[in-house]
Structures are given as C-alpha cells and as structure tokens.
Amino acid sequence: MNWVARTAVALIAVQLLIRGVLAFGGYFYWDDLILIGRAGTQNLLSPGYLFDDHDGHVMPAAFLVAGGISRLAPLNWILPAVSLVVLQLLASLALLRALYVILGWRPVLLLPLTFALFTPLGVPAFAWWAAGLNSLPMLAALAWVCADAILLVRNGNQRYAVTGVLVYFGGLLFFEKSAVIPFVAFAVVALLSYVNGSGVAVVWRRGFRLWAWSFALTVAWVVVYLIVVDEKRWSFDVAMTWNLLSRSVTHGIVPGLVGGPWDWQRWAPASPWATPGLAVMVLGWVALAVVFAVSLIRKERIWPVWLVAAGYAVACQIPIYLLRSSRFTALELAQTLRYLPDLVVVLALLLAVGLCAPNRPGSDWLNASRARTAVIAGATGAFVASSLYSTATFYTIWRDSPVPAYLQNARAGLAAAHAESSAPMLDQEVDPLILQRVVAPEHLASHMFALLRDRPEFASTTTELRMINAQGHVVDAHVTWVRAITPGPAPQCGYFIQPDFPVRVPLDGPLLPADWTAEINYLANTEGSLSMSLSEGSETRVPVRPGLNRVYVRLSGAGNVINVRANTAALSVCISPGPVGFVAPR
Image (cartoon, rainbow, N blue to C red; front, side, top):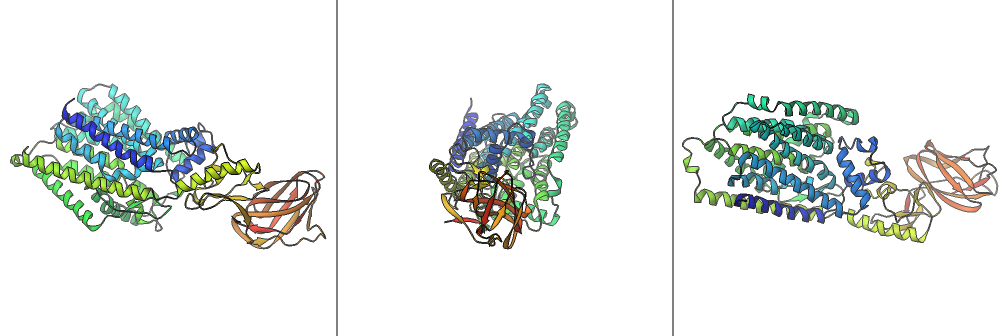
C-alpha cells in the first residue's frame, strides 16, 4: 500500500473518530421517536409498516433497520449511534473506491476525499439518526454505482452491471432520493470519457445494461412511490422554492466549501440551522471564484464539469423544496443542510473527474512545485480546521436538547410507577418539545414507550391519575376544571344509568375538539362497564366496580354532553358532578 492509500485510510479513520463523537454524543430526536413508536406498535414485516408514507418518504429498509434496533434495545442510544458510524464507514469506503477508480493512487485523490470527509455540509444529516438511515446508505450506493459504471464502460465486464443495479436497488429501499443515482453515474462516466477525449456514445453502448435495468427499476419505484405517498399533501409554491434554494446556496453550500458555517442556531424543538457570518460567506465566494478561475486556466474541457456541478446543486434540492414549500415555510429550512450530503459526494466525484482533464498549453507554471505543494497543503489544512470548528459548534448546539433528560426521567419514573401500583396510566401526549400533535398518534406515551418492559400499561381509563410532566417525571395529577358535569336530576344519585336507559350527561359549557379527561365519580351496584363519548367523538369503554368509586376517562372529541350507556346486564350506576378538562400535575 503506497503512501496515498495509507493517508486516505488515515483520513477516513479520523473522520470516523469525529463522527463517532458526534454520534455517541447525540441522542434521539423527533423522527427517531416516531420510528421507535411505530416499531413498538406495528408488525415490522407488515406492508403497512414498511411502506408507510413517512412525511413524503418511502423507506422500507430504513424502517426495518430502525425497528430491529429499537426492539433490540428500546430507547437505548448506543445501537443507533453504532449504526450511524458503521453506515458512515461504508459510505466513506465506497467513495474512496470510486475516487481510486477515477484517479488511481495519485496524490490529488486526497483533495476530493478530504473535502467529502470533513465538510460540515454532511454533518446534520449524519447526526440525526432518522436522516442518517436515509442518506448514508444512499451515499454508499451512489459512490459504489458510479465506480461500477466506470469499470463497466472501461473493461466491459457485465458483472458490474449486475452489482450496480443491486446496489442501486438497496439505496432505493433506504431513500427514494436514491433515484438520482443512475443519472449521476451516467453523468460522471460521460464526463470522464469526455475529458479523456473519448466519445459519449461508447458510454451509452458499453453501459447499456446498467442504464436499461436502472431505468426500469426507477420507473417501478416511482410507481410504488406514487401509490404510497399522498400527493394531496404536496405544495408547489414556486416563489418560496426559489427563496429556499437561494438561501441554501448563500447560507449553506458556499460557506460549506470553505468549512463553514462556523455558527449554528436552534429553537427547540427544531433542528439546528446554519447561521454563517458575512466573513465566511465572502470567503466561500472568493474561494469558489479562485478555484473556478484556476480550473479554467489549468484544464481543458472543464466547462461541462462545472455545469453538471451547478445543475446538480439545484436539481438535488428543487423537488424537496417544491413539496415542502408554502408561504408559511421558514427559510431556515434551507439552512439545516440536511438535504445536501449527496451533493458532497457528487462534488467530490466531479472534482476527481475534473482533475483527469488534460492540462492547457501554457499552464506549466501550475505544475508540481514546492510552492504549489505549500499552497495546496495550507489551503487544505485551513479547510479542515474550519470544518472541525463548524463541526464542534454544531455538536455543542445539537447536544442542547430536552430529549435525553426527558426520556431518562420517564424510563425511571415509569419503572417506579409500575412497582408501586398495578393501575394503568392514562394515555397522554408527551411534552410538545419532544413530539407534537402533528405526528399523531406517535406523540402519545403509549406509542413512545411501547417497547419498554418495565412500565405500567397505558389505557383510556384509570383509577389512579398520574402523568409524565414536562421534565419526564411521573407525578400524581388531577383534572383541571375547564368544564364540569352539572348536577343530575335524580335525588341522592345524580344521573342514573341502566342498560335500557342511556343518559345524556350535560356539561356546563361546550368543549372544542381535543383529547379531554373526565373525572367520573360514581356509585355502582355490581362490576361491569359503561360506554362514554362526547356528543361529537369516539366511544371509550369504562370498567366500573361495585361501590362508591372514581375513574378517570380519556374522551376525544367536542360538544357539551357526555353520552353514557351501560354495557352490562343488571348494572345500575349513579354519576355525580366532576371536572372535565386537561390533566395537570397535582
């Protein structure tokens, strides 16, 4: 192994060390908890689980991996962190293979490799487990298929067509955006052929099996995607899409070329977004202009490489922003940088292709020399230092999350509650800084903690009202008096319910649509059950015991009446006034 190969391996080892710190220092966030909730409440091999429309994504392999890891170690971050590091290793090795296929073990291989390994443009999508399960397999597949395509065209060995299609299919299973892979591979091979003085026709002819099979697979996957994803949720705000795209260039891509953004901001529960200062933005534009000018001076046939790079920077983002943009979209979405890791790999591959272009006559002053070596080494060192600083600032703000303390407190509290009482806990929403109602029903405690073994059961009724507070602690609770059950007409009873006599129990005012909790104070003659519902809402089955008792009931819906009927023969129940409202710490 020559010194270039050893250096490349060392760079990958350093990257894995840095990414390992990021991974093990992070924790579950938003979509991660959605994946965990689904893994705890669904069959991992069911089509409904594997082909769920997850915010516009179709990702059966990512669901399967996330579900398997979640069931092996529920709410334990170690295995997800390990999976991120392993996937990053595969992606980095696949990129090294592709760069070697293009450049061989030439020293210039270290330039695109260093850029791809350390630029902060790939950091946010790595640190977030759910995003990493999408992007990292795609990056590995992208680099691998490009290398296979080059080798197929170069030596005609058809096994590269087979492995290329299989790896491409694997990428699609993790992330539908992998559909760009055959197009990128064709562009890379065609550009490499062009800069080497060969025709593009030979690329099409020799790689026909790979292109044809990939096209057929892409069409099939598009059909699956359109079946799974609800297109009614799509929006097409062209003006906002342009604003997002331009913001991603000025505040994301350009500063990232020099190791920016240096600074990040975050408002929980949002993910961090880049907030580059004027200095790093100007530095990025200057560096881009210098590299562009030097490439034109030094290399022939370089224009198409630049055009493809610029085109992909736009094309890889427009579909996402078209589907997610509206007049309510925050421009900070474009600054999260989580849609750019594939651009990093494409830019690295295109840089390698550009380095293969023949030198222009008269550019001998740019030939190898001590001065050129010093400039390149100094610029590379500055880029790495800048990138490490940006990564460190991201790491600091990424760790500033309420999720770790909340989940750790909840696990301990649920275990203690289970030991103290056999009563179920009323199902409830978790704190909105952890998950919000927009991801229902995964925002419910019964979903988030479904895989925990040492916990109470979650139910729609309970005789002992407890809740998980904003810090994740399990505490005693009570029902707030948003509304109240009015006194009933029956003397010494209130509302008298029997199997043949359902009753409408009026409230002292209307309730808007929400998940409400009613405190039901009752006297029953025997054991049985009631069915309760708001005037506009679903029914809840409520078990009752003989004697004077109290039960807390979760009622979803709206209205000013609770409909009550007895399900058990010979059951007679008296219901007295009580509050209807939200659950709050006592």
